[in-house]
Image (cartoon, rainbow, N blue to C red; front, side):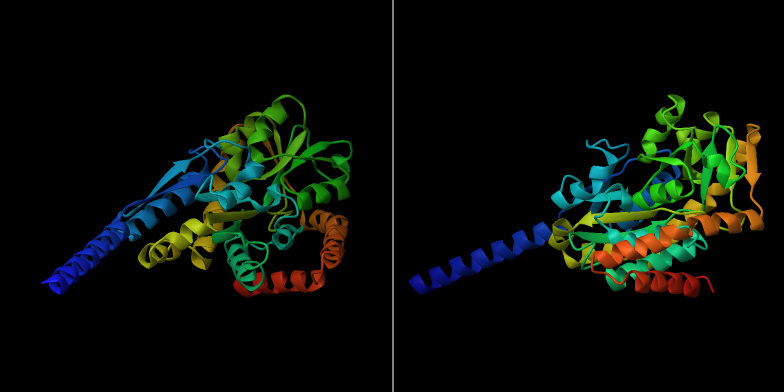
Length: 344
């Protein structure tokens, strides 16, 4: 009888443990997604929120993602990368260059005139990251997507028709590479996160900013400047973005919920994100035109002059990467080859 009782008790405990395991696996998971733009901006509206909805659907409703735009969980945009590592946020979207030196290899995609179009360059960025960055630059986080925006544009209070017009002009840049490029072109660069641009323009802290068209409406830039310099079919620059998850949080999930997240992340999502950002350039440009702002279209001959003037930026980056123990030239060559391959 004792043996029966012990066996029955053991069986009951095993059954209870199994029930608790099943119960725990079936629990909903709520994730906090944090980023720096207001919810009506294109990236949260067209990319981040739809991604969250697709993940929730793929999980059968077991994953819930709460979106905290405009740094609502606290801190400043440059702190987002640390927040996702420390678990302040479960998921973040940020600019890689907001934390200079933390993601050095991502800078290769920001070099002047390296980009062809945002969709193909974003897919190339993911492939490059898989080959070189997941266990190095990104080792502390789970990467969900990496991408770039459409061609960068100069938005200025006074016209920028030539490189010489930048002399004496204070111009905002988003990252180390781009502020370095602006200095090489003769401007006085100021590094600022994008949410700081409107106030800096309105208070005269800066005379101009470089940002893609797509975000200008949310920032009301066409109301603060009257000139916009574009580079034809070329891209003066672009910016590298990171969409990442807390690694421990991801690894704590059951396999089916990991699969739900993975199914909506990766190369195809990265390419889609770049495409959607670039597609939003057109309506934003039209809004500036409708205000009567001046759109300056540089000719291919003029663009060639800008390319030559910006050339030292790439050489400087290669030397800098070599000093850090990377093969800078090899990284540039591979990034360009991947972009070319994906642009065919």
